[in-house]
Image (tube, rainbow, N blue to C red):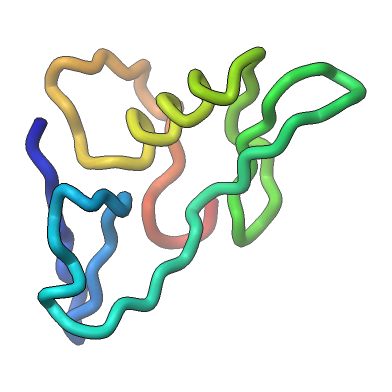
Length: 95
């Protein structure tokens, strides 16, 4: 599996955090969650929400499938994963 770092103007990096890349070697980290994954007792589903806006992005019966959705939709493009067009939020800007 390959990993990608996207450097923004000013030296900031957008990426889905993984310990496969030793980010601490680059300097001090400031980490923000892209999503919040919680279980909803009413629907009995795990809900993936945008951490900054609260917008519902995905739901599923298993937390692991929601984590997989997060990796597949917020991580770098993976040519082995087929994604329907316009089904995932941008990494930057408003979701």
